[in-house]
Length: 290
Image (cartoon, rainbow, N blue to C red):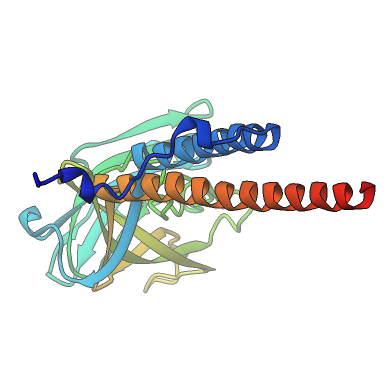
């Protein structure tokens, strides 16, 4: 007797003359196909889209930076002349720079009565501060007005990723125009290293920060009031990493198979129950008539 490979067929076929189509079955089949199409499109959208996964770890992610962090500062002082304004930088490594001018500019505003300072500079990865003041001016004003608006304060590379909502410019929009003109302003910053890795594996390094602030009147050793805008910073040892990922293809295929198989199975059970109940009801009606 020759070997018949058809014995291994687990999907046995039922002849068409032994099957019976019904209106109910047709209706359930149509609903079943529409439901499968809806779920398939939903899963396809999720497969095409990417997700952002975040994690925390203790490390310095940007070891190639030479221990430096890029800073971008944009602040307007509407009641202080540009000739009096300057940026000072100091930290625990001994850096003490008064009147920093590299990669910065001072733009007169409000008919030359005020000034907008825009600067890009670097700081060391150690606790320190930078401040906007009149300390570097050749002659000190009698009543310097430090009321201001901070348009931007950001660290590191700018991340143009909509799905990442972080405090990369936490002080942006800070308005201190209604403060005491002679008050000094302290902004205490905790800088958090942040890494973003896209699908290609390319990493971008930025920094988020939290901020607390206070106002006070500061006097020099001669008794004069010397207001300033201080940004005192410290670095967090915790790094936040955002990784862009896409659902693997095997998971997508598994989900689609589960949707199709599960939907057809449930629809078949519903159709079978309805058909059995319908046949039983017909037999009851025939019994009553007889």
